[in-house]
Image (cartoon, rainbow, N blue to C red; front, side):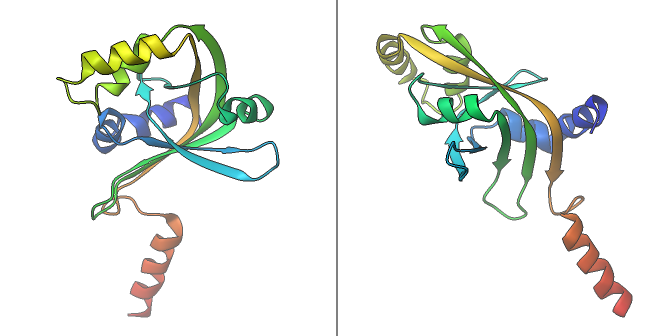
Length: 163
């Protein structure tokens, strides 16, 4: 996919709702043992790239250093499901303190009254964090109304052709 195609997928209203919502992403990557891993993770989206944050000693850091290829899924639980799928490469940067982006992304999930105490606790806890940045190299949106997986569409078309 080229950058314009990716941008078109991510600009769709349903994608924008998912990108701005409180649902965590699911980050998939390959462990150093070759086994797949999937973890829920909060994220920020700046219109061009995802940012996620973790502690420098988190296992995912060493795994992403060894193999930075990742996939992200953001989806809903209700019907019809809405699913945003993204692939890319993770860039890792160790930073001092707590990045403002981490705090801002967390505002989506923490009650506003609890936010000051949460932020103070986090800033006291973390001396450093790792910023995981993913620029999409591929994206697909499924809403199961206007877009469905190709294999399902082929099945629907085959059944319709049978009459």
